Length: 180
Length: 188
Image 1 (spheres, rainbow over the protein chains, first blue to last red):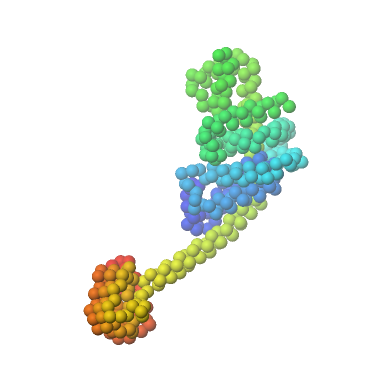
Image 2: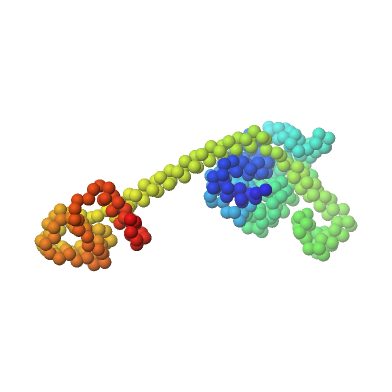
């Protein structure tokens, strides 16, 4: 099995369809981040596609010392932040049910879904009340499983800033989730 | 500092599992004894686990769509690469023609004696008659006309037309000159 970096090289050399493998490998990670940030499945699909196409166009500039997944997440994060800024002030609560159904139908078994549904609904609501930056660090840390250093690279912030943001984000989320 | 404070400032590292062994043991011991701190840790673990559950699979239709769009981009990328090559070759040819094409002496310079700083370009005396001497510095001299005086070339070569060359011979000669400039050897 080829590494991401090897596939990138093949794609740059013009090997047909090699980029498809990268899309298969990383589309769910990118899509999940976009969906949780944007709270709109259609917009999340749009941004996911944009992320991959931007990456494809800029493959020549990709630094292979850097994780390809993190590079994609960096592009996706920036696009999501732009989208959120563009629509600031607009209420997103009308798509909550759709979002939760998405989660249930994707990975969770029907029995567990009933138990988890309330938790996930409450959690997504609490998450969306946080500042965008806090949402992003929490999602990168726990949804995508990135280390602190990787989050710092993706968001182009000092490591100390990321630690502080994550600490505050966790605390705030806990308050919003358990005190509401 | 109370035990609770000691745990609170280490809570993030404890949750992340990055605490040194000794501190980790101390925190664990405190959590067994303190319901307030243990509840907080429990809540944080709960949130962490539930955020992980927010991962969803990208729709198959989206994956296919991205792959199709990338394939289209790939064709465009290939065409763009071909265009870059074509334009590069054209630019090199134009540059070569401008830079290496023999420079004719302006007619007003045709007098008794002429001295020219050619700056690497070939100087051609084309069909004119020069009654005096011709001195060229830093370039080759190609004589197609008549020079009655002496020809001096400093840092260059002197050649003269013996007979009319065909268009093909001129073409080959032109590229031979370029080849010599680049490699120092003869093309033919």
